[in-house]
Image (cartoon, rainbow, N blue to C red):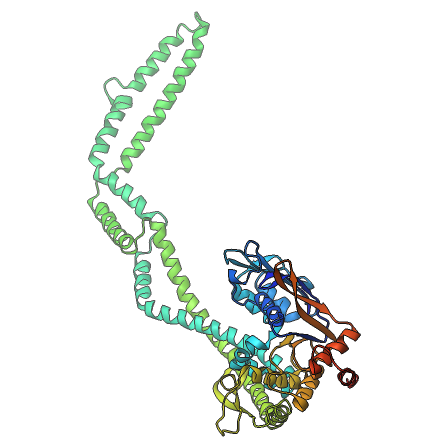
Length: 553
């Protein structure tokens, strides 16, 4: 519900504060006083286009700020969460227009785009002046109306929850099918790769080890020559280094008692002697490991040829990457079985959801068809009462091939304004004033069933008077028992039904004309209604008629 609207520096409004009440709020005033400007400012909050030409003072920015009570508005709270905007029981929506024409919008002090602003505020305010044609152009709105008439609220909620789950599983199923098709295309290639890798059966680091081994074998003669020369020098030549070192140690030991400090050097030489013996033995072992076997070299080269070819083919660098690729292929092959199992399970779930949805869609469709005749009769009766006696309203309900979020029906509201026997989609056929009254009739029939935002009516009284005006006032009054209604009117019958009456007028301040608004008390309310019937200075008879209109509530 709109609690407060603050307007600053907009068209001919310098400063204005509007605090509507909870039920029927009537706005009256002389032509050109600024009533539509008030709605224009509210339109900015709802996401309408703005430019610098709307500024009252070209050197200041325009600010329009609206406060809404949303403490029990679950759909709006969910919509805020989707946009990652903080929820507050009192929602503050602000629109700013700079002197250069740049526009900014905020919801609870969070900057938002105009698209987001329009989407969220559509859950709060329904302004028929601008949006009546757009609402009736949408199949979703028309179906919501029909479901409200058919009392489908419980079943449609269950159906739509199931439909969302059905869509989710269908999307998962399509994704898995796409993955399965991709794998089928790659299966022959993958199988060939697996067979090659299985045939190669490489061990960890095998190619790297084989390359080192082959390098050794290809230099085996050089290796043997160097190793043999080293062995000769250490232990096998005419004067082996190890033997010479042993003799040197023995000579030093003969004078150790005469020179005790020599024991340290002797011990060190003994350590070197033992180390050289170990080195000599290891050189012998290395020499025995060096092979001149050409068959081994050939086998290693063949193994490397296979490995290098596979590395190049798959753009890899190491043996372990080939092993990892083999494991990946094995894993994907195993996953194909899981895909098949997942497809079967998801298909089973989709079939179960579809069966339930078809049953519910059938019930929805039956309820809708059962309500059509009564809905059309009531709408045509109401249209006659609100000044369109020649109008004909009809609902066209056709089946769809596929189930949708609204069932298996598509709906179109048709309209003939003047007994032309040609029915046209309602959003194309009705004028602005007619559209407001048509929407009033629709809303009055669905008021108790549909969760509607604040409703704003302009032009609802265009071209009507007398009994039609009375019926419009009754519909507005009844509608306001369920919702906050704001209505600009020139009809005393409508103004008399108000729970709060606001008067818009012009005032000259300095050399500027500004629009002002005030709440009328009971006496001013009475006089204003009489003036709507009899002019600026109403007669006693007009005052009495106004009093009777008010008392007729």
